Image (cartoon, rainbow, N blue to C red; front, side):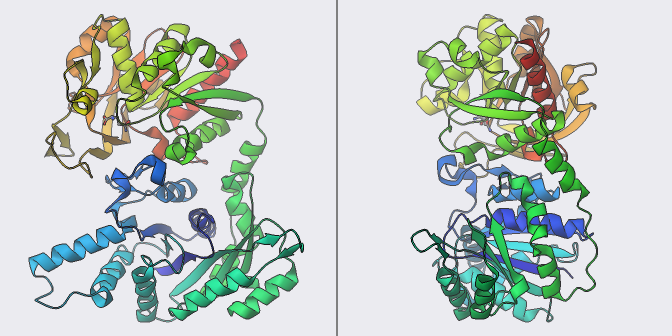
Length: 547
Ligand code: GLN
């Protein structure tokens, strides 16, 4: 049976609960324990798949094809444990399950209520895979006091009550605001937040206090006294230069020790921090810098491409260089020559995306990279754009385009070199889709394998010819253009195992030009940089030496 840490937040949102949870996961691993992290989100969307990246940041896809919150990305990057469908749930999903059961008659005609039906559904979710790990870390999204969050708080209260004593603890994150006028850190919001928690039956065991200023011992003691927490379980959390400092920083201030103490685990196994010491060494001892242009659509919100930004950092760590990624709005290249904009960069990345807006600009960025011999990494839509570019400018298919854009516009304007995929094979079963299907959860999602051509650049980059990567898309490069494109120098070097779906293209006689139909950024870790990102940054580094 696992031990449970429930992580909640108070005072304000965006305190870094996800990061604190992920860092705690890494610290428990460093002490030899196995962990799994889980996110419970109070919003009513069934999953974040259909939420705009502007609203919610990136959609993180798991191997088993769930579209989840970007916090699961942090969890994976810090623990290396692959998240599953059952590690992310929203109120929307919980209610939809409950209502579906009600329609099926599963409640035998009973009146359906938040307590116990909704809370039972949440508790069942929390306990999935209970016997697989030493610790289950469950983060509750939002802030204590939110209306939507109440069923979750009630469910974790019941859950802890039903388990043997000492099996569950509560960790609460708050903020200590600093009043410049009086030069003081204020503890009152934290006191109120804990009061709010206690009024619904939850007593925190560990308090993590975000603060921009050092927390004096006197204030720590005061928080402990007023919040009914042990003084050494009041953990300061200061701002960090890099998120990857979090495990070492939280360890220094005793977070893992406080958690183990709260469980009564004594003596605590000694931690092995070498993984994180190496990560920090690589991060802080970079030799030189490379500049990478990311030509995309959601450039205003960095969280929209969170995993790409992180994977580039990891690629830099692999090569001991700092990666300066700059976001360029693709639409600019529809009005202006990309040359002057892109010239200062050592490499160009075109990320995934949906919809036609900005795509002509991305095509021009791909053309620039191909013609000038600049390292290019095209991810999902970025690969599709590279293929369309080659079809138009090398293979003479002047009106090459994607069916996605014709569907969106409701008009037939392009020769579909990229088409809507309606039938494919997953493992050993067939999946079918219609153009008119719902938008939620109907893409080619999750892990699929690909077979790489022996001797290709990409096989060299991976050091393997069989790979498995995560997908999230509806459209696919049409294999019927393969011969035509290959004869012009765009090679299809990665294919689905049945040979029907192009997974990877690369430009022959180019220093480094690779397009992939999947999302390699989702699998990159600071302690295990993804080979494509390590290779891409290496190519950028070589390019930086040339100019
Ligand atoms: N819009 C494209 C598709 O659905 C690409 C998706 C993506 O980049 N993730 O195929």
